Structure formats: C-alpha cells, structure tokens
Image (cartoon, rainbow, N blue to C red; front, side):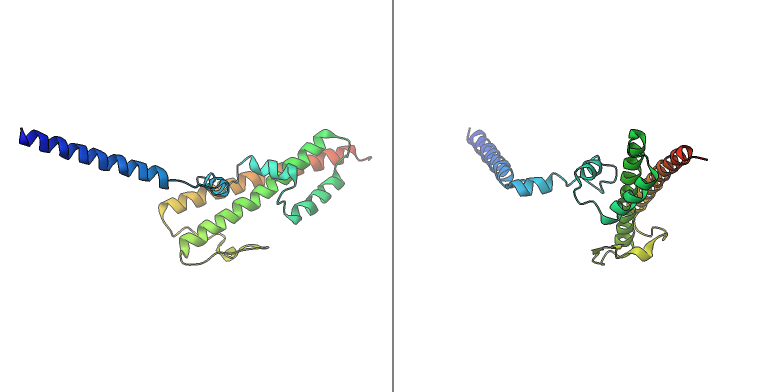
Length: 179
C-alpha cells in the first residue's frame, strides 16, 4: 500500500509540474501589444514579391518608389488616355517593374548573406549594398541556393511581364498613329 501511495503522489506531482509548465508557456508565448502582433504576423513572409500587397500599395500610392512615377509618365505618353486597355497595360507594366526590383533586391540580399554572413546589409537608394554580387554563383547552403534560384525565376518572370505589357502598349500606340 505504501508503494501505491508513493507512485500516486509522484504521478500527481509530475502532472502538477507539467500543468504549471504549460500555463507558464501560455503566459509567455507570443506578443502582447497590437504592434507586436502586427509584426509577428509577418514572420512567415519571405520577400513579398508575389504578394497582392504590392498591388494594394501601388493602388493606394503607399511606399511607391519615385522612379516608378517617371516610368508611368513615359508610358502614358504612348497611351491613349481614354482607352481602358492602355490603362490596364500601364498598370501591369508598372507593377511588374516594381516586382522586378523587389525580386532583384531580395536576390541581392540572399546572395550577400550567403556569401558574407557577417556583413551588415543596409538598403540604399541604389539598392542593397551588395550590388557587386550580381551573377555570383551561390556559395552558401543548398537552401540559400534554392532561394536564389527562385528569386532569379521571379525576377525573370516579372521582367517578361513588364516587357510584354510595354510591347503591347507600343504596338497599340503605333496602330493608332496616322500613316
């Protein structure tokens, strides 16, 4: 009987320890403030190149780079202001151009961190400080090489989208001009 009581007491103590541990984890886990929750909600986000957030930011004019406005004015010179198809092509070209630069920046950062992990990267107006690393074969881990390949694919895909939209806009412009 003594042995049974000892085992039960030990099991109860172990259960109480486990329960206390779980309660402590719940109290400590995760951010408490709204700002912290907003930041942690982006933890799984890698680069945002394919995110619809880019389109939303473009439509709202939030954090849009200045060079994009210059490109927009050049494209609008080719377009017919009344034609909705031209407006669609301009929007498509601008978003794709912005995504190309985002993919290239993310690729630069990935290459720099895989080659020089101790380097503190800083974003400048011209891009990441790792601009000299374009075209360098990934010497980091297999994961960073796969990320770099994926980002290169995105950059090429968006470059193609941008170029196709501009080509179609140019063709439409030439077909409207009088001979």
